Figure 1 (tube, rainbow, N blue to C red):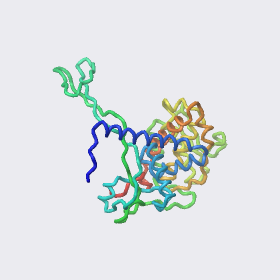
Figure 2 (figure 1 turned 180 degrees about the vertical axis):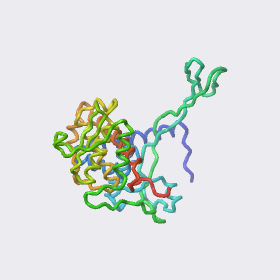
Figure 3 (figure 1 turned 90 degrees about the vertical axis):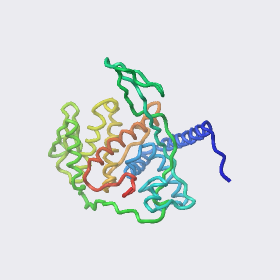
Figure 4 (figure 1 turned 135 degrees about the vertical axis):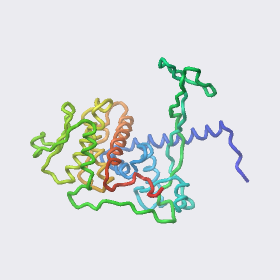
Length: 325
């Protein structure tokens, strides 16, 4: 017996309920970020899923952890994530009894407007056309969100997933080409990059960004991996803290963001992350609404890390995308 069809109003209400439930789960997940170790665990997920938005990374992480606890997936950290039809097309249908992970997908539409010769803009109604002497413009607009479902590779069976090249790094070694790519990205932002002999030259630090002089310097007496990690940290400053709103952040938040960018990029490239540590979350988030500050930092870190990873020629994590999809 077929299910009764829902009216448009019923469908809209059901959709709104799903979005509200996902947003409530997201808020609860953010509230669990308490210690520096919690923040680092989140960043480890972000390194694996950097192609997803920070909000969806949190949602996938929460649901995947529960699926692992329930014994529905074999690994505690997700690797490849895709929709039902994508897995089916790749010859790996979703296993019977598996439940998809709810994620928030933007609902994108277009707003139409008419632009006259004097530069005046007026919105156009649904069936209205531009008048003589006017030019119609169409711009993408976000109308809200809807809930969609994705599945992790451990919830599927069938054809093997293609191997992804991964760096094989010796101790103290950085992936070939990563340092040069980061340097080029920094220089594209108008900064110069140079080295100094040791930490004594820059007040005991491993690296330093001078916003006024638009210069970045890194200690030369470190191994290759440490120099590249430091360069990524400084790149985080160059990408995030030159202009508002990042420019006005408190210094502790700027340092957490830059170090978080370095962690995500390093982890995505298979570099050791044992030397990273982060301060107590409430200490740097602070303010009247720490959850809002954490989400803003997540967004900025995700944006900067993705830019660096996309610029890197070295093998790295796919960001959750299935090879060959």
